[in-house]
Length: 246
Length: 130
Length: 114
Image (cartoon, one colour):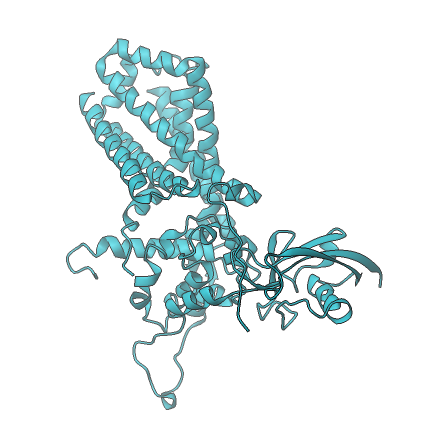
């Protein structure tokens, strides 16, 4: 195994003592097969215990270790050092306030996620002894891609419309609304519509498409939003016809 | 412990210079400026056509003047940018499911290019023959 | 939050974007580039063009293309204004959609005159 010396330029922000963030460079002896998260863990364990960042699973499942690596939103556990030069710049995900070092404030997203009712709203609740809600493989396929979201927030960090309009519900929350709308067991579309099809919902998206390009799980939030635009536009236009749903 | 989150500002006017994917986006958004002007040129052309042979040849002269030609080359380039970026996005906006399979995006894009070629040839034939 | 009326112009934007993606490059070539390089001989002469556009089917097709292109461009310009930092969305909407409406009406008038 070969070793490589990597210069990690990490954006630090310690709210109790700093007025603004600054870059601190760590020279880290790295193994060739490491990911950026391994290098950060080395810093934390061997060089500087004060460095703060979120991580958990180390295998692109938990969605905790999102950060801007050389300006690009990435999961630190999925960013292999072999794809980078000697110098790597690491910053907290853009478009979010910095809580401390690489830790961002997620409250805004959590509120927005709740607002789209990201859970199955069945036509009729049935007791457990009546069995499962059955679904065919084709019905599963209709929403499965959008259910892969791990709430890592890379899409929000890549989205310029979220950067410009913080009221925008944003890619992941809208894609998850679509995920439940597309679920054959769900009848909650009209209950989500007043948030999803509002000015700050799908209509604040201009289809830059950056969210889908950075998504580590290939959820394609941009595609989901355009599909919702189409169905919502049809709903809106037909609502003026006799018998249309208002 | 009290919190003191740090907010980073994003420029409302120059944000798109930061990343090449934003620049590509702005490029196809700006195509609308050229499409809008071209629509204006066409409408003027229709009025000139209605006004008679002299007015029409005036319009043709304007279109074939150096400025007219440069403008149309620009519109043409931006219309190609619009077409290619639009087709590229179609599979995302129009996801087609057949049974348990999603129709591959490249198939949808390819079909669009095929139709584009046919439409263009037909229009050229109609215009050339007319 | 209420459902947004942006659904209506978006529908025209999407329909127009699709139509002009197929038709506009070849149209620009015919009306703007071919005459300059002398292609098509006198296909663009007054007599042929007047007879061609005089056909009601051609009129209908041209009307559809021009109106959709105008509304497509108008909606995209509204988004563009926002992207360049102009936050007066209400005023911008009135201007761009107003221009699209005028363009649509003008096209109808011009085609009726031919």
